[in-house]
Image (cartoon, rainbow, N blue to C red; front, side, top):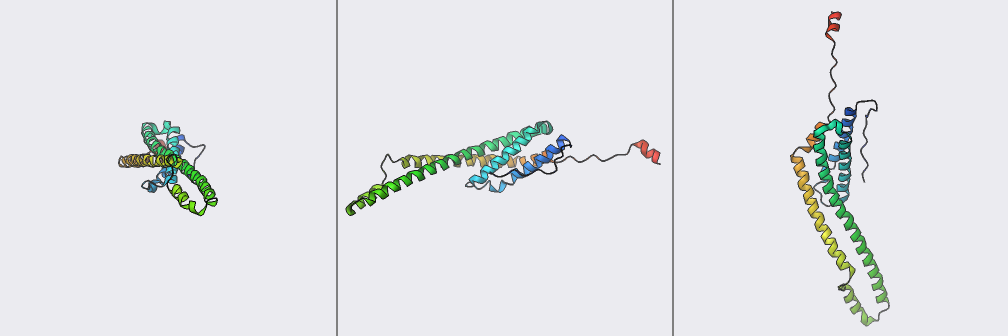
Length: 202
């Protein structure tokens, strides 16, 4: 998991709005730093890191609801939707890894058993052993695992496509610009000289 980008310049004695916008600006930049990996369906770790960046962005918006108001609520809904799609992809990735581990374990156990069978076999039995090893029986657990693996990959492809549709729609709706405007630091008010002071000075 990637580390959160540090936020510099937060002033404990400063105003809430100024600090909130400073933090949000970093979280927005961190989130969109992952934009180049969005087209890479196979980038499971990077997509997971994007999900974590989305969580940080969402939590920032939620923490400072009083600062960002209704505009912030809309962004919370958008980020939450992206986060949920990425979470579904990650769930598939976790299950795929578990199935791969089980397949490797089953293959290792069967390799040991095959080695023992070959070591104790007479020369004339080797062909039959090889044929049996190349044609697993119907109750071989690997058959079910391979079928399950195929379903997980298909499910992941569908969720990735749903994520891309959502990401592209958010992009077309101007989500990035909306977030940047929320995070823009307000301009300091110009110092004005009271009229009486100007008159006195004259």
